[in-house]
Image 1 (cartoon, rainbow, N blue to C red):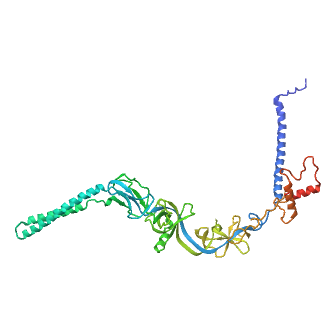
Image 2: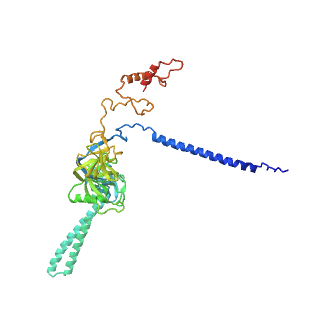
Image 3: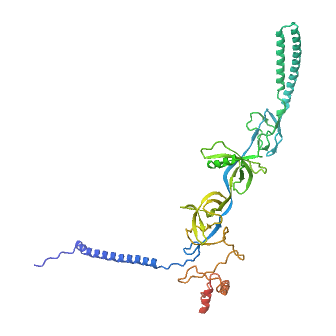
Length: 477
């Protein structure tokens, strides 16, 4: 009875016993994984620090060792043109819509569509019969009025004689003189009657006629909006084109000095020159919406390459800078120093040389300061250069890479073999070594069927001797 009763095992008491054991197991595994992570990080750091550095070929363009291969060019003395390239519209000097001055039936058309006509050429004829009849009536009335005027002149002479003799009053003389003047005015009105001259329609200007607006036989009137035909003067012809207002002072300065500015017209692709002309005038105000001013150039257009309303590329030669220092555009670099070039020194190093540029003409640019004639600059291979870097010239100045060999057009490629462990992957077998082996390898390649390896014998066949296998492997490219 003195024994103390032990408590029964319940789910709550069992969980209380297992909780400390689980905490100890969790802490143990955290420690283990921490050591594993430290080991992985330490192994990676050791591998990065002690990994083998791949062998690099010296002399390559992007190699970190050795000189960089570049192509040079020499600064020269030349002429740089100051040109403006703009888009212009061909405009005719004169465009005339030919209309009739009288109403009537169109009896005949004397031109062909697209024909070149001269001023005064007969273009069309209007039916003249109604006007011939009216003209005959006007001529009869004119003869009658002339007879009345003659009689009035005689009566006036008689009245003046009688007035001197005081036989009649002076009032009668004055009345007769007034009647004579009325007859004279009537005769002038008769002479002003429309004749048949306006029945013949002639060309008012020289030019090219377009498509006719009315067919023969139609009744034409003076108020027809389209007229009979449109004549456009195409020789000479003009081109109107805008230029930025910033270029206006240079253009006006040249025009005031009496210089003639040449203008060239090219097609849309700027590959074919259409015509050559001269700058004639400029507009009297600047367009505020675009900041440009319109210029007009005149072309003889003897070959007929320019048509009205045609879009052309215009090149205006403003000035020519003669005997200036020029370099190719490819030599110009832009960065923190502004515009600069890589100058090739005598010790085969490059230095950064800031330059001040002028106008650009094609692939050449004028250098106002920073270079002298004869200086060598880098035009190709400057993307990885820095100040003081060593370079190797990959061609003569102002020329490209060395020409290809005459036999094959390019140097033959070296045959590569699989890299052995520890050997660079780009190691190649020299062309001069083992000249007989490539020939033997080519023979073996010619005998090898497609899809079959020389090193592996077919099933059921005996393997060749080890020496023969070794020779085949060495000869295999």
